[in-house]
Length: 481
Image (cartoon, rainbow, N blue to C red):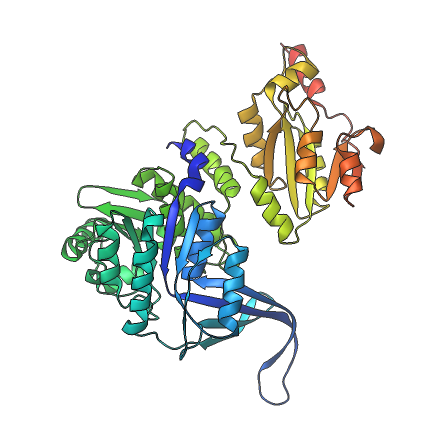
């Protein structure tokens, strides 16, 4: 697998077309039964609005750094305006068409103690006439994108999908469809279709054995005029099937928290990876990893490039493949976390041989906020600071081990000749809320402390675990030789 493509995620130009929705959540505690009826009383303490349906697919692409546009139908109402604001915040170039007579599709859920008490659906089905408004819009903007992703929730926005696909193919675009109809012929001309197992069976797929599954999938593809199928099979993983090839990937999650939106993550990741230059087999392999991350979270979750890189590293090493950490520009993700109100903690070091003291220290640092950024001295910087025989472990290996820790969210190398051997320049750029340093330091001696304090942040000094140091480990190893 060529992970160098992860450096090019922002080159993926994806247009999502489909049924957009507003997902609204009322969250609170339940302590009694209503005297009016035998139902729980939920004392609502917070309200959350999120992009749903095709809008959630677009959000997944955006969180993977793809350049994404969105076409869909909304009503001229408050819910439509709320959805528009969410999309703008998520850096999604939305061109939603407002319909007078129908409401914005909204799914409203009451949640208490991580359980859904009730769901209320506000929706009417859009007509073919409405769908043709999207067709006209598609023709206007299609040249701005390379990949057209149709997200079908059977709410009417894609009633004219056959003509939409024809327009996309005539413009030379790659077309992917997350289907809802059991008649795959509606998606004729698509390059990829991504049904789940139930949708596959409703369309005529046979799952008695791997052989019959593959044969029936190829028959469906041939009859529908579709190039390839990515069949998502829940705990059985997923299979990429075409007329000449089949590749199966085992599920990559050990503990499922919530499968909501997993299909959105799969097709969004597949499309983004293709847009970044990956071949189909590798793109599906990455989408499988992303699905495992998504279902381990609550709700319709998205996946970041850092989470994906971390899991891919573990996955490749477990499978005996070489892994080199890709250093994406993560600054925009940190900025987005700050914009979302998350408290950013920063610390730095060489972390040449990771030991128990490091692990405890990093866990303590993470506990001071929501996200932990580790500035990591590069190899040249360590050699200047520690001597020509250091580091013991090169930058990529040190970064990979750090990234595997649950406490660490981002690793950013520093230490070029221009930057110097302190992270002061990096800290000034990130402006973390909390700067943490381990050891016997005064705040005035800590690089970057002046910037953090002047910006209203905090500087904390933590004790290292007694007896734990890289130097001691090296001396002990040398003494036993």
